Image (tube, rainbow, N blue to C red; front, side):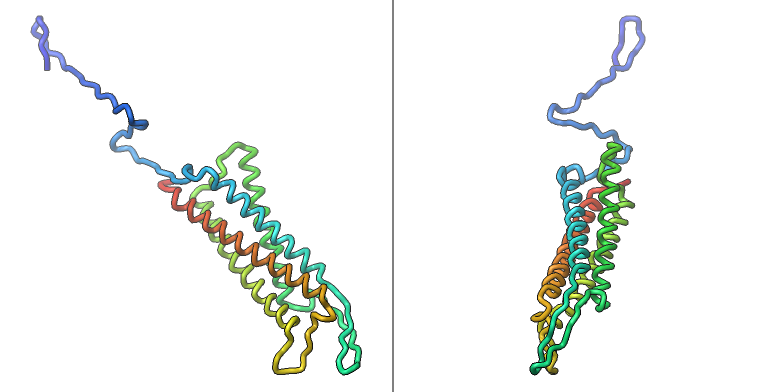
Length: 213
């Protein structure tokens, strides 16, 4: 308190300036929202790349498996047996085609959502609820692609090596194109699974950065 000549007292208000090195001033009592996502400037680009790669691998898996058809002749003890191989004859290969098509549709839907946000100039980083949904979807499709690829790989390996305890021959010798295309399709399915798993890791990074939303 200070006094002036007329006897009245006035209050002296002191204003404290922030230090020169500080950039932000936080008022007490107000909630603080922190986000670690801006510290990953290339995270959105990596997410788009992984989604696009998963889409491409899933489409390649479908196209290669659908085109795996071949006719051949198997010779056993001088007897020629005509063979015809088609992916639709195996339930495991059908499951692989169906899951690859579903994964391609899922990845395409997410890419279209990102493109829609980019056109509207909305941040690509989803909300916490959307990130949880993406994480669940990535986990489901990744595990489904792994299951489909494993089942198809077992059938492909059986066609290539035969059965040890019986006289079942190697069907890949008269049907090399069918076996090669099937193997390439299965490899693309596993790659799509790996890219979906990478997307799930990115979802976890986003979830760790989105707080108090």
